[in-house]
Length: 355
Figure 1 (cartoon, rainbow, N blue to C red):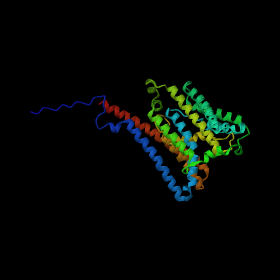
Figure 2: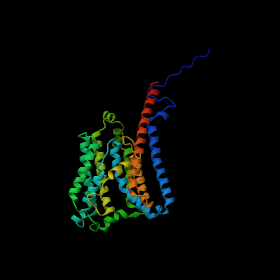
Figure 3: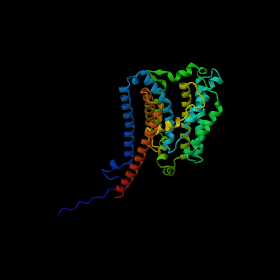
Figure 4: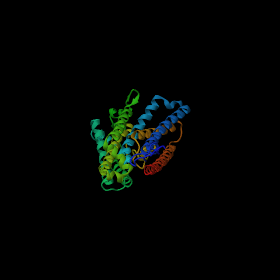
């Protein structure tokens, strides 16, 4: 008589063999986000190829340099915005910060002839730090929704900019050539600013992946209540994200001045919506907790490439805003889909583990 084989059910603390790869939520999210980033690259390449087939001059060396240079400001601000969005917040004031920083920093050449360029960048950084700190304090300590805070700051900063500038402006002939040439300088045919943004992107990605304070931003965005129970200093992290976003926007304002040279109170108006579109299109979930700075930078590059391509093809510039809006809606819908699939995966995993 053969003894019956007794099977011991899996321990409840371990995943059931063969099911973890299918229902592991982290694997699911990582796979979907990688697919989104790869999708952006594919769309960008296809768009460039189609535009080149329609207009061969699109891939000329000068045009490529212009696209890369033009995208650097958007990509730079998008990096700072990514840190904020990861925490399930949003910074709508970045456009106003860029505009204020552009004027205040460039005006230093008129107010203090002969001033060193590093000091001008320091002024722009200071403007951004101050604006970011105010938004961060009200959001993190006052616990006021960031949407309300930064929308108010958008108008406050733009109002201050208008009061300071008034009917005046910074004109190109008041700026030294060494300052103007910053935007035009290249290394190996690639704009210096593109190299700088690439280095900042790599550093930001390394920080978010390798440092606990960086990983905390993902935890806060994924589940603020759980992050608080885990002892994560939410207020400090959110405040730091806003300060960083403001600081980067302040530096971007100085770069804006090197590009446009003539600066008035309308500088960078509406930039914030393009930045948020770039971040979300680049795969950073508007609901927080997932995404990457590399994706945000790719989103900025995609939107700016579309803008330049439409101009090359003779399409009215009025189309750029609807296209950006459409891509933003698609990206948000995809984020919502990811969230729903993740919730379903979590329920399925709990059901298997509890069996």
